[in-house]
Length: 267
Image (tube, rainbow, N blue to C red; front, side):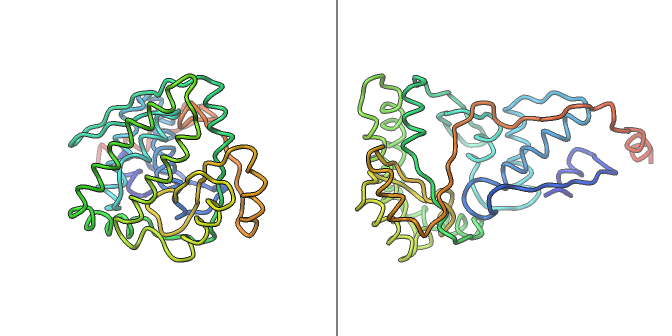
């Protein structure tokens, strides 16, 4: 990805270092986060401002075309834009619409989502390829999942509705998704999910393509301790929503010597 990104934006004479707090191949969109952040840094280094839409589009092109990785577009868009959004996809394009939700309701949603690492990593592109094959014959299931988008947005946008309904919606969505292909879940993962539901979770899902990585569960506050106790063998990872998307933490483009690029172009 680094080589392709450097060729794509004509970068040279750079040493790229990177590290992460969480494991790769775990369904958190880490590869797309890296792609978006890398391109954002390259543009900043050249002294260019790039819109969130263009940044997402370039990251999609880098991963899906230049690196030939299978998968969707949602991770790159989520990282570039940040915040809580509804993303509408059409052939060759996308539209990002912020979800209108009160701060109190958003805080409650954040507090009621518990995330656990299953201990299993997997190559998401392989599972994504299997899903693409399987979904050709799963039109009914895909339409059911699509209908849940409107329902989920309505639940979040209501000022006084029961937010627990969103947790139950996650359960419905997960049951549909795991039925698309047997690569999404395993017996071990099903046992983890069933234990969480039995001890207080209203719903949940594996993040990303499936097959391993992180489970996220919607759990009413009064059942948090019970769920954490029953899943104590898994790593609990607290997280907070953010609104900014990818950011350049230190910005000083004048330190970058562009003379080398000019010589390369002249050649």
